[in-house]
Length: 391
Image 1 (cartoon, helix red, strand yellow):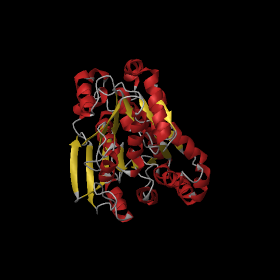
Image 2 (tube, rainbow, N blue to C red; image 1 turned 30 degrees about the vertical axis):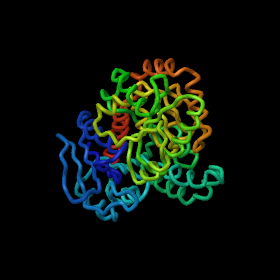
Image 3 (tube, one colour; image 1 turned 120 degrees about the vertical axis):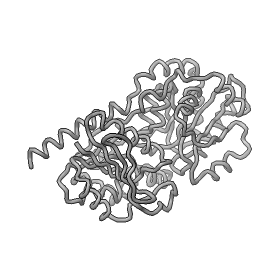
Image 4 (spheres, rainbow, N blue to C red; image 1 turned 90 degrees about the horizontal axis):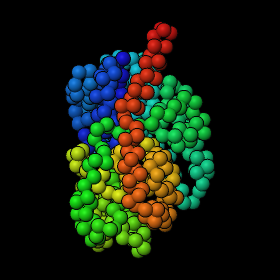
């Protein structure tokens, strides 16, 4: 099959979507398929990733709210690319304009919508969650649910990467939803990379001794990640137990995060770590991963932490909640610093060393992206075969 992924949020310095796409470019040819990613870029160019794998960049303007990304300015450029590439299977990786463009393309190839984003959780629930119930917010944003239902009617598959999102989409009236959990890149993350000396150095930089609990947060400095709330939770828990927090990341809200941390000696801010072995060593050397975002569709960083042998402390909604429960960690009330602080204390009181040992024993069972792609390509093969028979 020739699979074309129209991916609006692929960028050289991207996060989880970039990790996912990079692995797909390797996994597709290994399964006998050609993978072509169509992404917005600085200029028209082709990047060859190997036999039967490439990225076709289309010249596009910068995204105004995050300069690391660009966006497709019109549907016609997407239609022209699809006409030229003639896919057997086409994907859209965003539920916004890209999905509309792929849905309206006049080609006959089956279509799949990949729910890499959950706009309601990232924006509406976050903005109005303090004053209205989720049901009331859904009613107020029924226009978006209508939009999703229209897309659902025009797509053969709507692929959800987590149980919690799939259940919400089905409750919202979508009929083509399938759950196919994502996973990690195999071979990168392992408890064997744990380095007690690194852990001690990080705690020392947090002004704490080796008996303290070392929490790790990784992700963009963006409003939906709620890093100030995570900092507040760690500070509150720190009044009762010694807790150090290492935050790894950057983004448009970095200045706000820096101001919020202030002179707190127990919070260490680090730049993004793009070296994968170094990141794997950092992950394996903490005591737990703490996450603040309830809008994750899957939460790849949580899966990487689980593969590194870390328990998770996460909100009770979104993809990170599935990961936390499966890791033997703790969940807390979303967007609630007090509840998060109590979850940290529960985690410590249950026994950090014991929970870490149990998490490391389970690490090898973490789902891989290869398993995800094997399931995904099998579904695509079935759809393409049916389309060819019908033709």
